[in-house]
Length: 67
Image 1 (tube, rainbow, N blue to C red):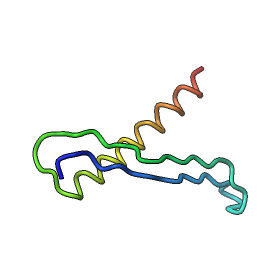
Image 2 (image 1 turned 60 degrees about the vertical axis):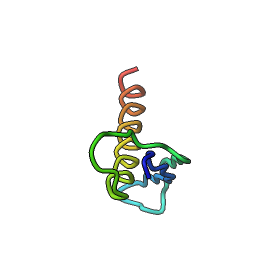
Image 3 (image 1 turned 60 degrees about the horizontal axis):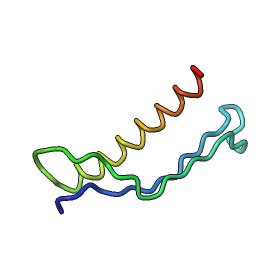
Image 4 (image 1 turned 135 degrees about the vertical axis):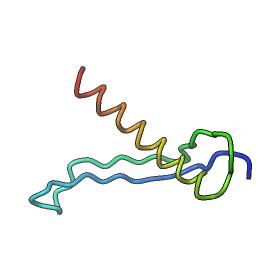
């Protein structure tokens, strides 16, 4: 396919000492990865979805941390 993959994720952050204690849960539905030139293999498309999720999470953390 020649369109970005859409990735749905559930990120769960837990306390190190007590993994039963969930500190934060974030969910994302149909987050698109950025399209880029070259190949459009499934691995590239899905990888871009994960990359976009990570970049968005980092921006949100930085915004809250340096507010």
